[in-house]
Image 1 (tube, rainbow, N blue to C red):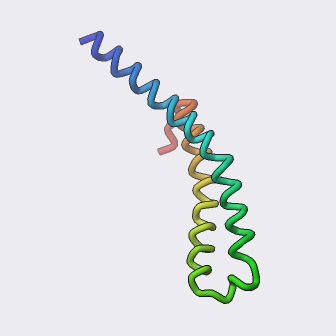
Image 2: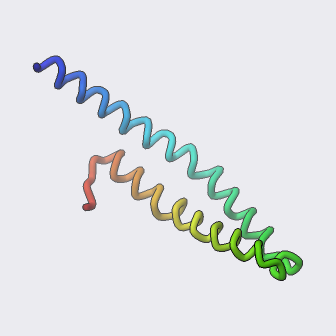
Length: 84
């Protein structure tokens, strides 16, 4: 049973490392994309369209995910902190 537990611990460590690595990679392009979306959807011509309001709201929620959720996930998985 000890070798199975060791293997499980190695898989858990590798998956935590992958989550941190992929989250850091997604942070920068995601932030750039959200900034461009904010620039586009706040144009005067698009402010009059009702559909652009929904896209703008979605962009604001994406900004929250990128600036709050991803850093919390990086810290919790990278340093084994449980904030629950």
